[in-house]
Image 1 (spheres, rainbow, N blue to C red):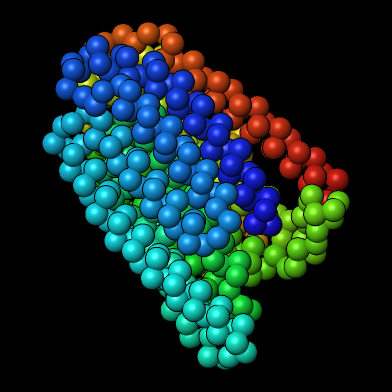
Image 2: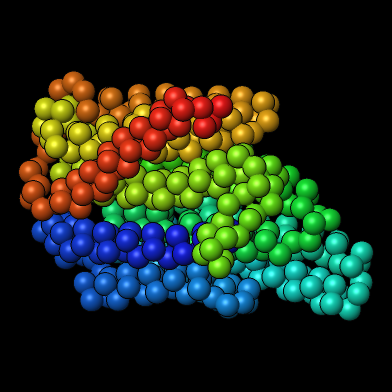
Length: 425
């Protein structure tokens, strides 16, 4: 499973990098025209942007745990200047907050890595019972450390500021790619944990996953900044991804490798459902969040503010953007024809009843909060007249939108056929 996830994340990160790099060319040029010259030099921006992509690929391909730690730390160092592109007070504050909190987190991850490696040495020496305590302590530090970069609550506090202050393509790459790379680090550690402490690890991951979903739901309800709204949505979905992965570990059964190691299935239907839901949720959360952040960046350029109260009546003043915005919110909330509807359904039908009830309640709260804001921004009459944007700003978002529509319709059709033929009964 871990190999399949690694390949998926490498391909996904590359796709998102290309999409955000193209959007950067359009966005940065337009932002400079409207906001003046008080910004980072373009060559520094593109250098850091490409280095950021390289560091994330390094983290995914690192052959050892210490090298993976180095790569994740490198992602922090090369992405921090991108957050402060505009050199405003808010952007500089967000950058330093990002550096401080993520550096603390990565320090915890380093300590956890050392403890896990010490436990592995004890196992090699035959002290299996004595290693369990060190595995447990090490995993707690790893989960807290890499969970900081993943955006899991309560270690998420850097994320809303960084996502809201960074240029839109950077926000999209942070949310769509960086969080996944940090999550993969947790997966690698969970994969090497001995069976004797599997229950402890899974309980810890479920706790942080559900807590992240709850914290995001609470902060979305009274949100006044549409880019911060998307940041809290990222926290919510990383929580869901962690829950999906943990349920796969608990109820998925054993993996069955076939085709000379080129494919993986699970010994029961629940495992196949959860595995497909996990990979699907990672991919389509990243694509949908990229669509939303790029659209939000366009709205920021047009209106000059991130305040929800000032961005109203998009259906009248910016019709093409209104379609992207409301459709993106519908998709990210997991409503049909979004693929996220299928992945969240897979989570609900596979989880214990008490967990399904909690997740459904929190998802309803998120849906209510995001749809209220989405409808308020698209319906009614404009409060402020937006400045027109070049049509090229819509090229990348509409390509992603088309892919999401096609994938969603295909997925829902396949599910309907499977139910009709009784394959999912």
